[in-house]
Image 1 (cartoon, rainbow, N blue to C red):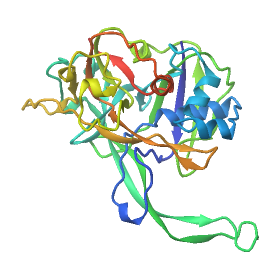
Image 2 (image 1 turned 60 degrees about the vertical axis):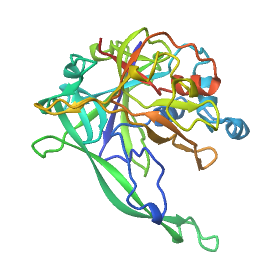
Image 3 (image 1 turned 60 degrees about the horizontal axis):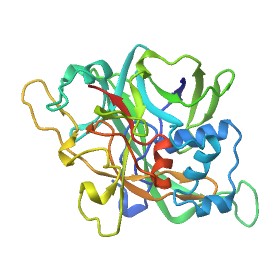
Length: 336
């Protein structure tokens, strides 16, 4: 497979939940990596794909499913898998969303942990992910039909979070996101394109040869039995409105495990005291539909950095779930 390399230009707006109004000013979450739907939309833009508004409106994922089918309609092929994060052009890391914070952890170290009793040493943390909160306001495009005559929308104040990557010494680090993609796109030279929210930009390039660091990256679509750590959010879709608790038989996406004990959780961080890994469930926004100018629905998910013991290959047939996986959700790194 070929690889996509994304190099952000400056700080990024990479939210997990939507930007809320004034009553939610303090609620900003991030993984420090772009959502798969962000990368999918970027690919569609680069390839000049235009979506029909009615088809997007009928799609329960508001465009993700429509775009996935236009890019590749093979149900067993993941369009995007990843990311692995290249730090300062020399080291490779994966995101870990823990109680202590969000970190970029040395990839080689995480692949050597005991999956049943995982623990991350502090020296293996290559960067902390920090969020700078800034106030913002929504603008009306015109007043009295005069172009570019903008004014603030009354009551539309919000707070947005911009992501920075900081080393243990307090210095900023440069990052690049590496993804497996399903085919060579022939993008030519480096492309500058919109990346994430708030008008941020990134340079995108591709390689015909797959980097060694992506060799052990796969999708839940194709994962064989073994131990894995999640690189992107792992969707948990309730089978009915009565699913109130995390139960193997109540959620699509847990068919590959025998019991909840196979979700080992997020490794603890520290050099001395061993703490049990924690299972975290997050509420995840699926991004923004540019076609409909509205936010997509939210789902439940296991966050990046969750170790899971897959016992059997995926047999799910539901289009909604397959489309999420093809879009890059539930990307995995094999560790055992």
